[in-house]
Length: 64
Image (cartoon, rainbow, N blue to C red; front, side, top):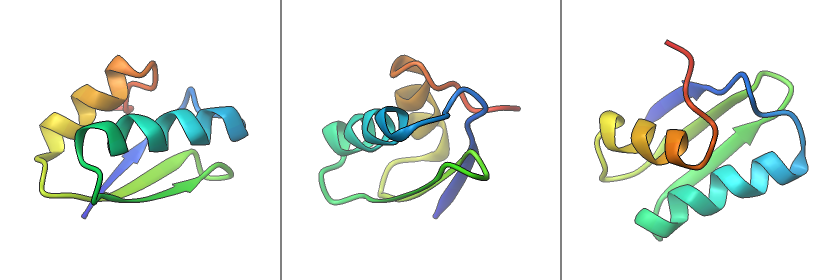
């Protein structure tokens, strides 16, 4: 399981965009978005680096 801090995420649209981006590359991924904390937790077979790339491409680069 991987957790990312996404400072640019702020609304329901962001939640949907993040979830959709992950599901496009791994349809079996479990995605849990916490808007209040600006975090997303992903259970996936993909590596942390791959997921970070997917999130960045969707416009939500993880904080370092």
